[in-house]
Amino acid sequence: MTRYTPTPSSIHPNASGFQVKNVSFSYGQKPLFEDLSVAVGCREFCSVVGPNGAGKSTFIKLLARLLEPRIGEILLDDRTLRDYSRRELARRTAYVPQESFFAWDFTVTETVLQGRHSYLKPLERYHSSDYDLVHASLRRLGIEGLASKGINHISSGERQLAVVARSLVQQPSVILLDEPLNHLDLAHQHQALGLLNELNQEGMGVVLVAHDLNQAALVSKRMLVFSDGALVEDGNPDDLLTPGMVEQYWGIKPLQGRHPKSKKRQIFLPF
Amino acid sequence: MRARLGWIILPLALMGLIAVSLVVGASPGKSCTWEAFKPLLSIRLTRILLAIFAGGVLAVVGAALQGLLQNPLVDPYIIGTSSGAGVGVALSVLLGWTTALGLTSVIGHSLFGFAGALGALFLVYALARIRGRFSRLSLILSGVAVGFVGSGLITVLIAFARDQGFQRLVYLLMGDVSGKWLSAPETLALGIGGVISILGCIWLTFRWRSLDVISTNIEAAESLGVDTQKLTVEVFIISAVLVGIVVSFVGAVSFVGLIVPHTVRFIFGPRHSKVLPASFLAGAVLLLASDLGLKVISIYFPVTLPLSVVTTLVGVPAFLYLMRRKTT
Image (cartoon, rainbow over all chains, first blue to last red; front, side, top):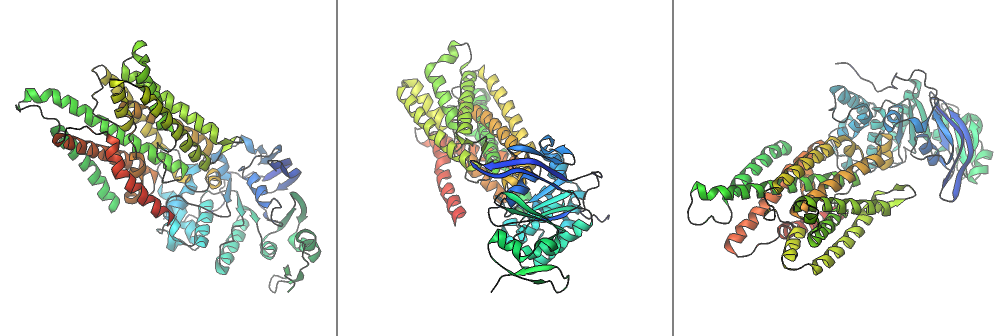
C-alpha cells in the first residue's frame, strides 16, 4: 500500500499567497477595517494576535472569503478571491473555526472524509485513496483510535483535532485557523502546534489566530497585531513581544523573560 | 448490521403491504370472480401508487430539508410550503377555474398547488433574508409563520366552500390517497406528477455529499467547498415543486416528512447517501400501512377518516418523544 501523507498539494507550484489590498469592512454601522493592506505569503507561518474585538477572526474570515470586503479586494495567487468558485478555494485554503457544531452524529472518519468534498463530483463515491488520506491525517493528529467514534460523542478537544484532520485532507496550500487550541489540553496543544510547525516546514502556509502570545511567539515566524480594527504591528515576534507593546494594546504591563529552551522572548502576567 | 437488515426489511415490507393492499378493501359484493375483481384492481392499484409516491416524496423532502437546515424537527409542513400548496389547491377547488380553463381538474390543482407552494416559499425566503443573506434559524421561523397564515387562509376558504366542494377540501387538506377524485384522463396527470417527483427525489439524492458537509457550521461548510446559498435555493425550490405536486394529489399528509427521516437515521446512520433513498422506502411503507389501517377501519365502521388522522396520531407522540430527547 502506498503511504499517503497529507501534505500541501503540489498543484499550485507558483502559489504566491494572499494580498489584501485597501480593504474596508464593517459589521452594519461599525467599521472594522479601513484601508487595510497586507500580504501574507503562502509559505509563511503567521500568527494573528490582538485583544478581544480587535478584528482577528474577521481578518481570517476575509481571507477564507467567509466575509466579503466592503471596499477593496483580496487576491489569492494573483487572482481576486471573488473569481474563485467555492470548490477551487477549498482546494487551496482550509479554515478551522473556533468551535464546531455537528447536526448529525457522523463518525470521525465520515467527518474527516468530508474534507474531500471539493475534489469529488456529485455522483463520485469516496475512493480508497480518500480513505487512505483520512487515515494518514488521523494518524498525524494522533486520533486514529477515534476513527469509528461518533463526532458528538468525543470531547470538544478531540472534536477540534478531527476538524483539523478534516482540513488537512483538503490538501490546502494555506491553512487558516481561528483559535484552534481553545479546547485542547496541554499535550494536545503541544501536538497541534508541533504539527503546524511540521506542515509549515513541508511548505504549507499557516495563518493562526492565537490568544496565547507566548505560544504565538514560539511557533510563528511573523506576527500580525490587530487592535481596534486596524493592523498596528507586523514583524518578527521576537522583536514585537515586549512589555511596552503589550501594555499599549492590552492595557496591562507584563513581566518578560526568555523561553528556557528556544531563548525566544516570552511575557508573564505580573502576579 | 442494523443498516443491512434495514435494506432487506424495507423492500420486503413494501412488497408485503402492496400485496395485502391489493386484496383488502371495500368488498366487491358477494361474488369473488375475476370479472368482479378487475375494476377494483385498478382502483386499488391507483391508491397504492398514490400512497407510495406521496409517502416516499414527503419523506425524502423532509430528510433533505432536515439535512439542509441541520434540524431534525423540520418537515415540509414546518417550512410553510405545504400550507401554501394547500391554499393553492383550495382556491382551485373552490373557484372551479381550472375546468373553465379546459384543464382537467387534477392538473389544474397541481398547477395551483405548485404556485401556492412556490408563493409560500418565496415569502419565507424574503422574510428570512436579512442584508442579502439568511440564517437557517430565520428560515425556520419565517416558515412557521407563513405556515400559520396559510392554515388560517385555508380555514377561511373551507368556510366558503359548499357541499361537495367542502367535503372534497377537507379530504384534500387532511390527506387522502383513495384517488376517488381522479377520473380516467387524470391518470396521465398522475403519471406526469409521479415522474417529476421521482426525478426530484433523485436530484435531491444526488446532493448527498453537500447535505453531509452542510451539517456542520455554515462557515466550515463553505470553506469545504459547498456553495451554501446556492444549495439552499436549490433544495428549497425542488422541495416546493415536490410538495406542491403531492399536496394537489393527496392533500397535506402531516408528520411523514418528520418522523420517517429521523427513524431512518437511527437505523442507517446520518449519511445522506443512505438516508434519502431509505426515507423514500420507509415513507412509502408508513403511508401504505396507514392507508391499509384506514381501509380496515372502514370495513368495520361506516366512516372514512382522512389519512392525516392516522399519521398524526402516530406522529404527535413520536414528535414529542423526539423533542424531549433533543432537549435533554
